[in-house]
Picture 1 (cartoon, rainbow, N blue to C red):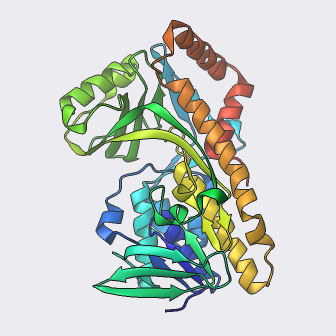
Picture 2 (picture 1 turned 90 degrees about the vertical axis):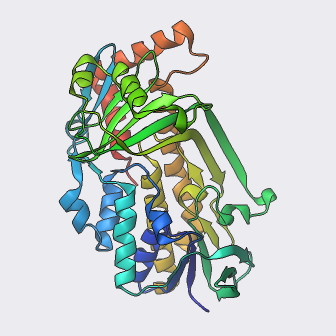
Picture 3 (picture 1 turned 60 degrees about the vertical axis):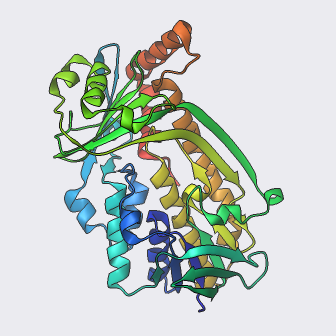
Length: 390
């Protein structure tokens, strides 16, 4: 098989890149190790910056998002028993975010690709990348007991942190930066109404908590937990009791509980791999960087990566210029490190660390007090939350 671009990974970044390339008239094949049902079963965050919304609109998959998504002009910080609203819309000249689950983004892109008859190969086993340091890259995989090979011009590695793409790069050619946080998030999805019409981020002496939502009738809640915790140790009742303890009195009173649909524990880390281009192999999304979920930057960074890459490849094929692909890594990393900084800062501000101590808790309280009472500080936070300019 021959194609212009082989995309590794059929998550939202790979599917969005495929849609962008199809719009530009560029032939691409997507390879995915798992089944479609497995891909759609991944539960992830869903706070979309305007740049992500615009990209989805640009490839014609935004209709359901605009119909069912929830537009938010602010969010709330809870500490000291009270809540304080950050008015993103007012502080940023009208910018807002869209709450729409990553699973739904993936479903919309997946359905659109299938409807257009574009090539996606699911359950592709033992994928391997070859000769991407030359001019004729190849991708091998196994399917239905046979070995197949794809000849291509470029390879886009959109297969996540544990994927084959980054692992195929020689260690001497890549540098990684990482911070692993000493706690995780225990998340519960439930068919219960949200506590509030906007997200609540809570700093509490017992640990961080977040009240979020997927729709007016489906909620997603989180509590900071130990990395040693197991999901099986947390009954639904134990989770709801702990969440209630970490909320302000009004939110605790408004909390509606119910059976969990999904329950999981996610570790938190900050991670960046540099550079993001290796000959004719490009890394995008979680294959190149991870942010802690505080601030919901992961999907948005992935969308920006493939937005840059899609435009660069279109420029290469349609204008015969390599300027975009040559600057791809530098452009992405500038935005990535800004988002990494914000996610690290927000995580450090809102969570209880093992070595925080009484002094550290007082520093968090003082910074939160300054943040909500200073227009300049609130504006800085709002600008980062809605997404910095490209």
